[in-house]
Length: 214
Image (cartoon, rainbow, N blue to C red; front, side, top):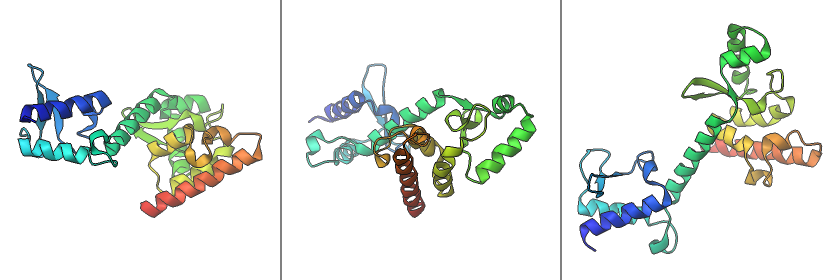
């Protein structure tokens, strides 16, 4: 196939999958379309446009997943895209700043700041850093702004193992395969002891996996 055709075919494929915007995050060459709509591929290291050979190499790399290269899907890119979507969803869910948590608790911002850092240091509170600074996800709190007691058995092993806070937030608030499809933070409050035990053990297994790869 002619060089421009290869560039266009690769660009169209990634556009169809919705993965173009995640190329840079994966450390791969990026693609934009110029004023004529032509796909322009750029080397992230040099800033130069990819040569024909480099485009062919990138094509081969992205098509190497699976047993049928012609219909392969770039799994790592899909994983990055999924993580980005989950991250965006978490940002739009309920969370607290020091100030809003202080209002909920009916105390000063200074006391709240100290309490948050202490609890986070003890692995009993999940806090992440986002665009607006420190964020305390609301799902883990009760009506008074304190950590729900039933979540401590899930938070402690995950956070002590060094699990990324965003990943912990996502795992706790979405159906988890390791927890038989249950949503961990919901199942932890289940009246069924079996559900509680399932998610507690799942958190422990996940923590061991994180600790082993950290």
